[in-house]
Length: 442
Image 1 (cartoon, rainbow, N blue to C red):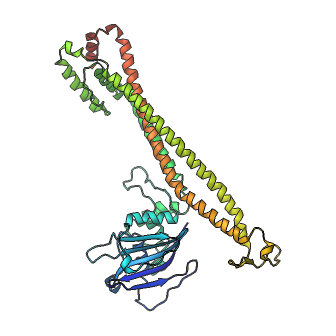
Image 2 (image 1 turned 180 degrees about the horizontal axis):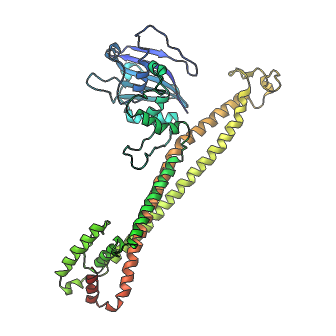
Image 3 (image 1 turned 90 degrees about the vertical axis):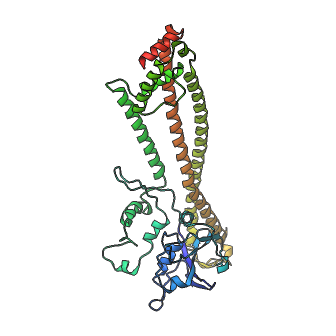
């Protein structure tokens, strides 16, 4: 999808308006004397499209213009955007006026007010242009942040100043600016179609798999540790001590150093507790882990139900989109007919035999097929517009499912450890010997 410029509008401080009209779908050439503002049009458009800084040249235009606006033709209607020009002390303004409709009239200066901000405007323009969910992750070891291609990056490939056209060193708009060459390298694969809509979800899946790999490697290191006192063993001892009432219900540390310090603190605490007090409470940690397991089971069922519903919806949308697109291709054959007058439905000749056609010769009406084609294309665009959002929901739910499953496995390991130790200590279940054995293990 794309949009086309229909009008560029400038508003003065006293409410006067100057309008530059374009003909959508045609080559528009702007002529005029030198220093009449032609070069500033690109800066006006960039500012209206959400630029962080107003690059409209200082001079009479900056002094005389209060708001700059642009009317666009989009796939399902028209959009009008206006943005207040900043004063001399600021680089930009956050006051943005935005309206959309089937047909949008250019508002007067008295109607302009803030209805959105530049950040939200970029998201709205991305939706109109069909820029879906995307992200470029830098290679490991590099410090730059992940980059998401948006409308500001798309404009790099749409505009060229006169000096950029003449340059033998740079091809794209603002390519000589700092950081722009790297942004071009990161975003051009998406705009060329080398990165599809499933790229983000696959990258999220890759990150989850890498996270699971790191967890598995940590487990392997623990199992292969020469000391035999890895994190899992230390956490098991702390859980066991809590279950026997030797330790308050504090969270179990994750890091090895924290577990080791907790064991040392526990040893000092136990040393000062009389044995008759140590026998007071048993099984609290085991019961807590059982309750936690029930909660995790319930949470996992809810997440899996939501994930199943979201996947089914995405699958249905993809199926509809494929079938509808095939139907669009079949109906596009009607464009072979040479239309004389769309209002009267009169057509010049058949594209195959070149025989003159009249309305009574065509059934169903070619105009009706044109209408069906337009409606079907609109339906396909609506489905494609919402597909990235649904894929994002599926990705989020998959992440929640993986996290709950990991917590469930961790809970099961701690329960199994307590049960194994209880079996070993069954002969000491009168109370005090059990605490003494655990104290010695700690």
